[in-house]
Image (cartoon, rainbow, N blue to C red):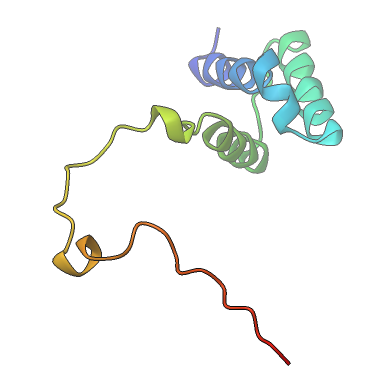
Amino acid sequence: MNTRRQADLAMLDRILAPHNQPEMSQSEYEAFVEMRSILLSSGRHVLSRKQRLWAEDADKRLRALPASEVPRGREVPIPEVLRVLPLRPPHRRHEVS
């Protein structure tokens, strides 16, 4: 099996994983399903350049980490000006007319 074709199929499998389906539009999902079926049915076919660029973009977009899983950076000291702020905002004044 062609290594480019294997890479294309692996990428399409990642894109079409069940947890990614809610992130895609129905037409986008159907297009990727069709690309994958064409690759599976034909022995020598690979994705075109435009198809591969679109699939790579979708793969990167869908594999983005949620904010809760992104590692924190180094801790930074709080500037002095922010340490003296009140804990609660001041109360609203009622205007008497």
